[in-house]
Image (cartoon, rainbow, N blue to C red; front, side, top):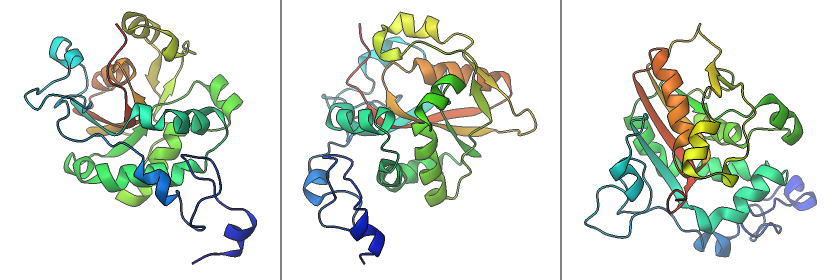
Length: 235
């Protein structure tokens, strides 16, 4: 049912960024039909979309040992690339309600099967957080946690190193860039199983670095759920 707020301040579609049609929804029906989900076959380690039914792992996971246990992603990155850019850099924090809700609805069954103690959003460095005003991964985690009844912990781990934007770096550079970037701040909260929440999965460097820090503190199982996954890490 439409509210006065919907009429005076129509919600913007996370795909076309125009007022949602039909009004009162979270996304235009036509735009939603154009989204490309990660579907089978997908990598049994990182969850990236595969093109061959005979594959079990993507080229990256077949040759690289990741620190995390397993991950899943909702969308193929190219179909939501512009959406994610506006969500992160354009102040469109309102997109989180739809995007986080979709992650919970479509990935929730697997996440609940992992029986996590908490959802852990990938943290931003405080300098970047102050500039942006919010952490997009944190907003996704909040929406997912509310729907799945799993606590989202924003202050459990911090990014202590203001790393260079990863999109500008190759795989090896990303790994070096992230060394000693994260530190667990809440030693009073002991977790056994966590799910790391992020907006994009590319090389896995960020998730691996967080997972390595978590292992040092006794976390037994580390999974991740990402809004999107690219076709593969840059070579």
